[in-house]
Image (cartoon, rainbow, N blue to C red; front, side, top):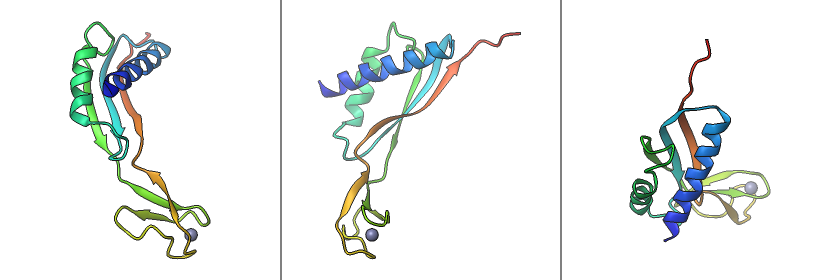
Length: 116
Ligand SMILES: [Zn+2]
């Protein structure tokens, strides 16, 4: 399933990040999933629970944040929120999708041993 490969990619990314910080454990992972990313949050959470045993994320809580859908004008950079007219009010040019279609790793809380 789509969500499983995304979770596996996320776990690999998190483990690489944790190793580069010499972390011994991962406490919490925050990801941001836009409504247009084509990711089912419930499936993503279930996939995470199924994939995490045996990884560094075994004891890590997963938080899923939403993301607003925004559109941006190519000419002047003006941002329009979802639901508004998808034409820039200044330039009258069509706006382009600028947010809401991504899955991003937002925050990572790691257990990093203190060196005395
Ligand atoms: Zn514009």
